[in-house]
Length: 452
Image (tube, rainbow, N blue to C red; front, side, top):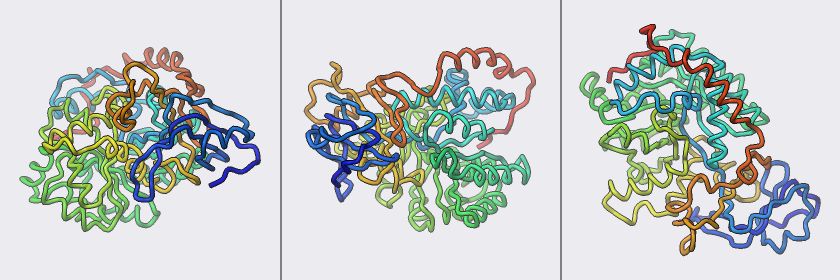
C-alpha cells in the first residue's frame, strides 16, 4: 500500500521489519519504514520512499528490528507483589501454604499497585497486550486505561463464591468490553475445573454464547490434575470442558501440560475457537514432568500462544524468555533439533499469540490495517553480533532488555528504554509499605483449597 502524502502520526525509518507472507511464513524487509496513522499501520515501505513524507513524530530505528508487540497470553499481573515469596515448593504447598493464604488479604489497592509494576515490566520487555485472569479486575482495567497497554481481562471466580462469583465475572466483562478506547477486550473467567463445578461451567458456557463472550480458564494444567480427574471422575479436565459446553465457546486454556493423547480428538472436534497459553518457565520450576504439547496441538489446528503466568510462580513477566524456552524445550521433548525453528517460535510469539486472545485479525503482524502495536529491538550489542540469521538472533541471542521502544495503537509508551506512562519508583515505594499486611498469614485463612 502506498502511504498517503497527508501528514502521518508516526514514521519509523531505517529498520528491518518482521513481516508475514501470504502463507504466514516469517521474513524480514531490510532498510524499511513503517507509516502509522490513526493507531493503524498504513504502510510498510522502503526507508528512502518515506524520507519525504511528513509526520508529527519520527523514530530513527537504524540497527533495530521492528516486530509486532508481544502478547502475554496468560498472566496474573498483580501477583508481581508475590515475586519470590513462595519458592522451591511443590504445587500443592505453593497454593495452600503460601499463595492462597496471602491472597485472602488482597485489597483493590494491592491489585492496582501490582498491576502498575507489572505493566511497567511488560512494556520494558516488549509486551503490548496481556491476558489477565484475577480478582478486583476493575483496578486492572483502570491501570490499562491509564498506561496505554492493550489487555484481555477476566474477573476470576470459584464455585465456593456462590452464584454471585459468576455474576460478577459477567458484569465485569460486559461493563469493560471495548474499554480504554477499544484496547480492552473481556472474557468470562472461571478459575479451573477443580474449583468450579460442572453446573457453574455449563452456566458460564451458556452466558458466553448469549453475550458473545470468550472464556479464559486454567485446565489440564499438569499431569497430576489429569490423572486425579480420571481416577475420581473417569474423565479428564478436557472431557469436563467438552461435557459442560465450554469447547463450543471461544476458549483460552491456560497451560495444558496435562493434555493427554486421548484429549486431542476432543479438542479437534470442538465447536469453538480453542487456544492454549503456554508458560514454560513455571513448569520447569514446579518440576512438572510434561510441557504443553505444542506440536500435537499444532497438528490439530489449535494455536499455542506464549505466556508467563504470574510472577509468583514464574518470577518474571518476560515473554521473550518464554519464546526462547518454548523453542528449546520443544527440541528437547521431541528429540528433534528441527522443531521448533526460530521462525516457528516467532510465529508463536506473533500471530499465534494474537489469535489465542481473539485478536488475530488486528494484532500479530505489521501490515496495512493492523493495529500499530510495534516494538523496536536493538541488535547492535555484542551479544547479538554478527547477525547471520536474523530470526535465530531474535529468538536465541536477543533479550527483552534489547527492546528500545514500545508502541501501542501508535502511541509511544517507552522510548529509548524510558517509560513514559508509569512511575516505577513511586509504585515500588507505595507497594513496599503495604507488603507486611499483604504477606501476613497468621490468620490461617485461604481463599481456596488445592486438592488435585
